Length: 91
Image (cartoon, rainbow, N blue to C red; front, side):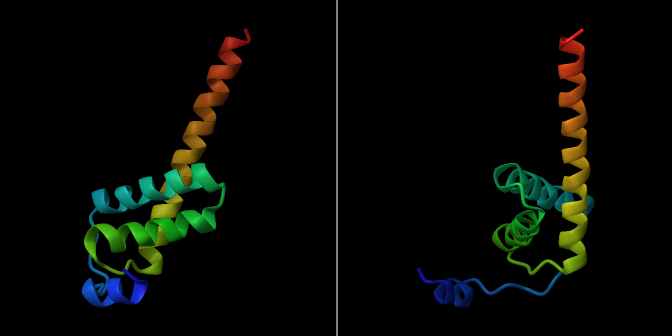
């Protein structure tokens, strides 16, 4: 299937209200993307694509940016956890 065929077969609905769980799911997709690419820009794209793939909606920039910000917070938590583990192992 070409991109145009997919778009015509599965048109995206306009953005809708997303629950906290929906936003967290987008954030998880963004975090996984960041882990693989080390690019927050790619993480943003992954969050938007996740909404399109899972719910057939076009996420608003605010929804995608919120998901990326949650992913960044998660990434900071991972970094702190690893640092604490490494520092604890060296003592």
